[in-house]
Image (cartoon, rainbow, N blue to C red; front, side, top):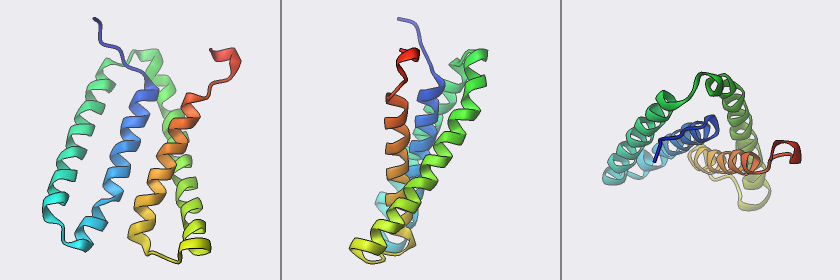
Length: 123
């Protein structure tokens, strides 16, 4: 079985690391030191896997990565804006730590679903 890698998978791993990092202020504010330690260890593990995936990427696949990372950044920003609107309209302002955590989660989900839907020409 050969090892395969794709820029899409790498962009999802980077997004996962960003999303997990966005939860750190919630654990700091809540005084959950054990959970904070575990999430930091998980971030290091995800970044290690992302580095391994980067090393497995072919040169032509690395060319597609910057566009995917820009798309991820746009999805994360859209997730933050959408979650801020949701918090203000429905739930009441929950604070920036909750917004960062929930907004980046929504952004990563938008990015993943966007990668899943491909135009018919690309299938």
